[in-house]
Amino acid sequence: MKKIFFVLLCILTISGTSSAQTEFTGRWIISTYDVNLNDYAIELIFKNGIDSYSDREASDLFNTEKSRTLAAGLYTKNYNFRYHLLDEDIFYYNNLSNPLYTSWGSLANGVFFCEQDVILRPEHPSENFIVYSKGDTPNVGDRVLGIQRIFTDNLNVPAYGGALTGCLFHVRQSTLQNMIDPFSFAVAEEFDDERKLFTIANNFYINVNGGTSFPPGIMAFNINEDGVNLNNYDVIYQDASNDPFGIYDFAAYTMEIVPIDPANDEYWFIWTSEESSRSDRVFMTNADNIHRSYHINKGRIGGIEFFNNDPTQLYISTTDQGIVMLDLDDYPTFNLTQVSSVNDFNHTDLQKGPDGNIYAVSNDGKSLGQINKSNGTFYPNHLNLQKDGVDCIINTYRVFENPGIQGAFINYYKLPKNDRTYIPITAEADLTHVICPGDETGEAFVEVTAGDGYPFTFVW
Image (cartoon, rainbow, N blue to C red; front, side, top):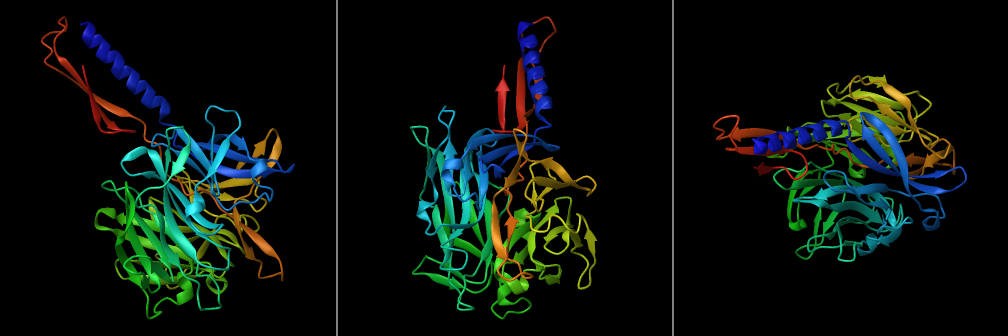
């Protein structure tokens, strides 16, 4: 009898813990500074929306220019905090009140970051990979796509490296306008202990078998626990004839993938171009040989995003008209639905949070707006960023020329690429071989059916 009561107590404890944690969905790290030029990395806590936030460190000593390209958090599968990134620096604590830092990016030439995505290392729920693009400056030299494993060494200090990590390929300097060829990438969800890394560019050079060049298009690599094997890649789409797309269309700024049937590698690919004459368009292609170019014609596009339950509705941040919504089924003619004010959220990234809502940055950098996943309603002041009552401004951005004012530039804000939702532990219990209620006979099986470390089973 004691044994049965003990089992029931354990089951109730597991159930209670699971219920209490279902509201929490994940975390972000963003980089900010306040009006007094104090620099903060802020951690956002997501439930159904951003529930709270707190600063992780004051990094004023490490960045005198008050600007960065990227910020992100490194978390375990169940969102325990490990480290956070500000550009190529990893900040860690080692039980100290003030953070230490080390650089992870020295294996990739150049100092200019374009994009970065922090993912879990497949089959290792407490380690991370950083997928990144990097170059010498915005307009000079090669850019590279790379991947780094981030782990903790025996001194409890973050370290990086691995047999199949490092520089994946170069995007060579273009002969067109003597400028760099931009590119973008997207990482699919894990499937069968692997993830797909898709990248789009108008010029590939992979340093294997003496070096191999590829024409404009989309390529895919497999990411497993060892990183990426450069000899194992797929050409998803090639556009050697420049029809139906032009070469500048593949000078990608941002890229989204829509998983239609991941088991059979079926995705939609949606992207925008960084090249100024094509930066007001959205491009789409898929496995059904559908290739489309939507001329939005509302100025440079800062971000694109969609909700998982309806990927045909694409949200777009435009310089001239703020956030609008495009129905991808409407082609070649289409109408845009206004989402935000025309005069705000004009140069922002759009990213899904772990809660499934889409987030954007106001023009002054002081607020995060939210497009609600339930009804599509836009809330421009979902979160006003402050530290001790003082306004904070997001300082992760890319800079592009303002076409309307000669010599003027606009900051296009960047947000973390992390929409991974926390999955709490859930369990099912089964009692066997219990002869009668008064006996201490039988066994109890409690099987964990979801959550960190799933699957495993407890037996009493």
